[in-house]
Image (cartoon, rainbow, N blue to C red; front, top):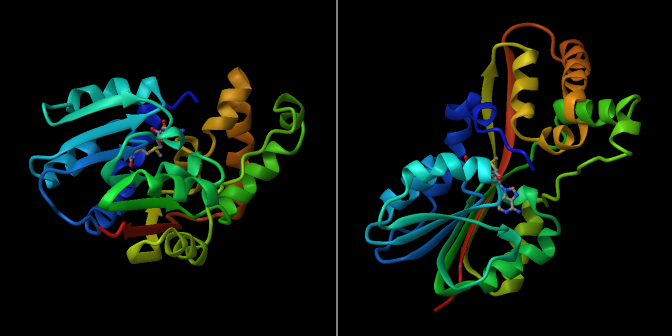
Length: 252
Ligand SMILES: C[S@@+](CC[C@H](N)C(=O)[O-])C[C@H]1O[C@@H](n2cnc3c(N)ncnc32)[C@H](O)[C@@H]1O
């Protein structure tokens, strides 16, 4: 997918807050072999590596555009690789992923597979957005399923594969995990107006639609902007953003 690092960074401060909540769940041990799945532009992978002394940290992402930016943050203990997070191989002491696993399907299969890649005593720590029922998502799905977009998109819609907190907890338990922590949190963002909400989703949820629309992406954005102004009038706009965080450890 054609990720745009500049668009993604428009709300960098808001987007990094859950990263620090996730980092707080990580057990700080030296000499870990750690991987950051869907590392994006690498600043946050750098923070992760700095928090894990003497560890070997890999940032993995499928996007060449994001990895091009990430290269600047590499160091002897940290490198970046292009690859698909859903096809992870190897054995890891820490599998970390902030705001990326929602781009891979079938979490009832994916989470146990990632868990199996943990070394004994290893930890998995994940954050995924669970905001898919917010009106902003309803609006883009509704707009994409109306003409002319439905025909151009050939009926394409993307639904978040994100599960409920109960389902993640059960999956981890069924894997045999210990120290299971699962919670959902609202990050209370205050954005300038409804156009800013469209800017926000343009950096993430709309990316697969843009990929299929080519030059007509601006028409979709314009149509969504109009509907969003009706749905979220006034300034500023309160954008309560729901996210799920979970962590668990494989027994020794
Ligand atoms: C919302 S960004 C999050 C980036 C970073 N973790 C952060 O917190 O800023 C999602 C990232 O997941 C990457 N991604 C999407 N699907 C992927 C896949 N199947 N394998 C690896 N990375 C993927 C995208 O390229 C993008 O960089």
